[in-house]
Length: 287
Image 1 (cartoon, helix red, strand yellow):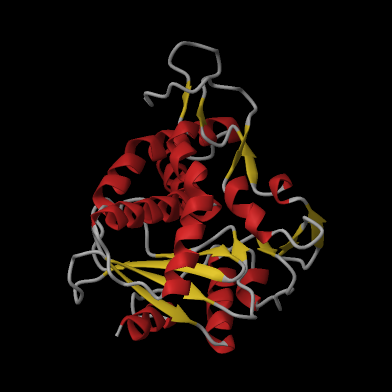
Image 2: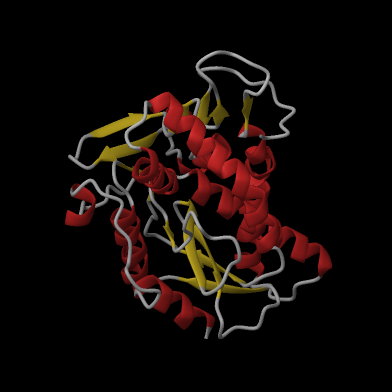
């Protein structure tokens, strides 16, 4: 079980889009938009969206001392989201590519924040749930939540440790076209992933900044950074991919996305090959 020192609170809402990040998506009125696969739009404060009751708790039918939570796993990335965004913005503004030891630690923190978002996403949780159902059949929501948390408990720290000093980060910025966020994010992270090999991921951090992390066989293993300003077509490709990987909800600041058929189908789809449009875009930007 988790060695958590955090007090377990039954019924606590755990955000898969943490408030420290979603705040960057608020418009001038302090609100963000959520659209579902049927096209229904709701506007509210960012903190009101994207939470799961008991999402990170491991509970039993009867209270006992073995109950715990993994919510504390995400304290470090959540407390660091604002500083990570500030750091990534500064890299873009300075076009700085000289990475020293202190910055290597900062880059590892960027990866931890990115991984925390992937692991908490409903897409990743849905993959765990699908595996559990194949093995054990249909379970109650409460039991499934506990088993999902248990699975993350077993793997999360290994993922973080194995991510350190590996691969390349790509800071992707847009000057006028906004990125969208979703309940699915582009990545070939699977529930069986432990060691990153030929790994690709791309996560929007703000409406005008996304972060990609790639660990590919063709690249040197040392941590480096690429900085790129995207055109409208490239931003649209990333947003369409977010729709493909999402199932129920998209979040946006001001520019309402045109819903595509893959999102309307209400499934967590994904590209079948690592040679896909986003991987190709990443490779092109690095080269």
